[in-house]
Image (cartoon, rainbow, N blue to C red; front, side):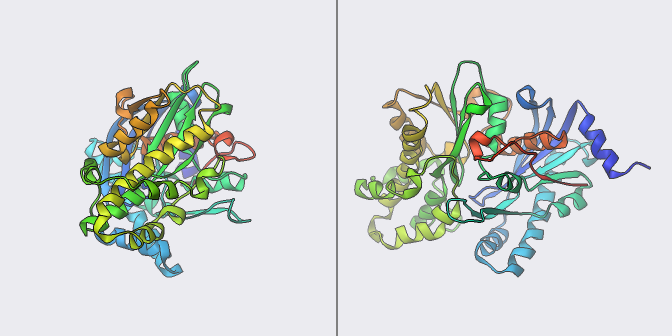
Length: 393
């Protein structure tokens, strides 16, 4: 009878692996699940997406996650297991929808849900915590699980993010071209994809949809609201003096590599904006924070990217691509620099902008299973390349 270790070694030797990538971001809207066939490694990686779905969080589970963000050890402990069940369900669902059985899946890759991140610029002990217990995922699915990718990079002196930069380089680097892969989730992050991995730069540019969503919920008095298609924010006028103050935040002056999250641009940050703004002009506040996301992204390029690289194009993915007001603001800003803006789906790479981050963690797990390093020190600031993640047999 073969052991689970034998199974791990057999999966590592396979020319192609079927992997479920699971991702839940700072927006707390649900779990993205991507069922992929992954072959090769490094820049020879090839991905075929078989199925993608998003399992929305129930209002009750989202409330529990938000409680864990600010809660005690008991809440954090129980929500860790509750989320493990949700991630396992998302994996089962996407496999079933693709017409496969779990016995046909080699690996499940789970990023988990970030509940806290302590940046090295703010503490002598940088650290990070993602929950969504991988042992629960392994027990409910019977599959090998790779999870908890970020801590090893931090242990090696890095920021623990952005890790998707490795997948961006593997899939999108082209000789003689420089692309900016801009993701706009709850937090916005960019990867400067060059021909050489040692030149890759990646960092969080600042807020993405987090502040926008919080203000929109206040405007509409609806806890589930968001600025769908930019329909609400386009009704307001940008408050130029406030925008200038927002862009003067010290985070934007810090050079990369750097990372941020809810600790800096979350509910407390947004609540202060709302409470100190004219309540009769909240629609203008919404318009302003949409412009804030766009302007902070492009300002990051002007400060830290354009002086170093001749950029051919900016390619945008993440939930922000669906906000037309935000995309229009980005396009206007970039026109001044003569740089083209493209939607990720225009690349025709076989998967959508919405699936990109879940696919990326499937790629990272593919490297881990083969014992290969997959952080980029140029992006995270780590002292050396390391193998990411923990394997649950």
